[in-house]
Image (cartoon, rainbow, N blue to C red; front, side, top):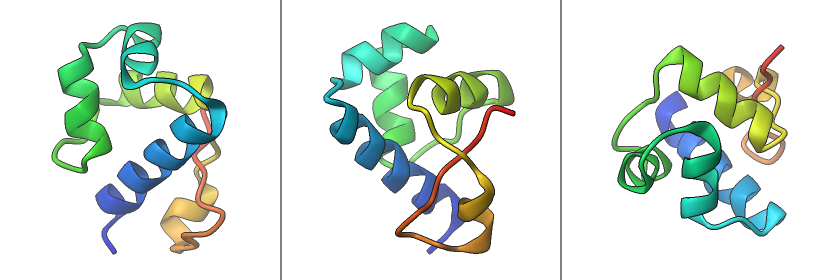
Length: 78
């Protein structure tokens, strides 16, 4: 699975876990709902600023994404 696909899967998982809608996540990080949908489907990657906002808003950590650990994949804003 590519990093982009892992990231998209983790976004979906975390969003559902936290009970947020796509609209809520998108508005909270300052992007359109459609753009967020592209990101969550793995069709696009966000730029660094939006990615960091997503990590922070969805309480994610990134170390496991690059290691390929799909069960605990998370992304960190720092």
